[in-house]
Length: 174
Image 1 (cartoon, rainbow, N blue to C red):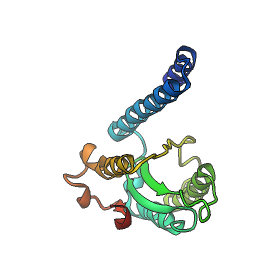
Image 2 (cartoon, rainbow, N blue to C red; image 1 turned 135 degrees about the horizontal axis):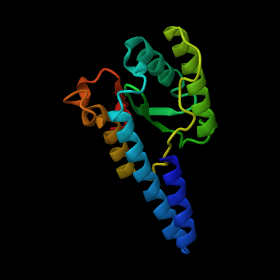
Image 3 (tube, rainbow, N blue to C red; image 1 turned 135 degrees about the vertical axis):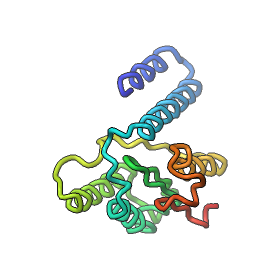
């Protein structure tokens, strides 16, 4: 999938001369790729399912809330069996100065160490790449929050997102 994404990206760069059209096509390609990757993760039970263990999910949840209002404003999250979705707001540049890559590095490093210790294991816990997306308006924010919360429903884990124990939405954003 990574090779397919790169090939599609290169094709768009080659074929789209208009910068605005090229940017829009690249954005659409990223969304398609993300949807395929997410569907793969949701349906792939051969991947480790560590995040469904309450003690591991708790580590992730605690960490997400730990940096809330320090590095970002936490909007929503959903901890799936082998990945998680989070929606954060870093738009207050005076308050949140850390770039996204640094936020993700800190979060992944901290949680990997704690989760590996809890699982009595060593080695890579998270995949290297994170799939991030910039939200441009309130409609897109709403759609992204709904997508995040509905993920366990789509994966067949629960009938309603409210019944999933590892989801959260900040009422200030609803």
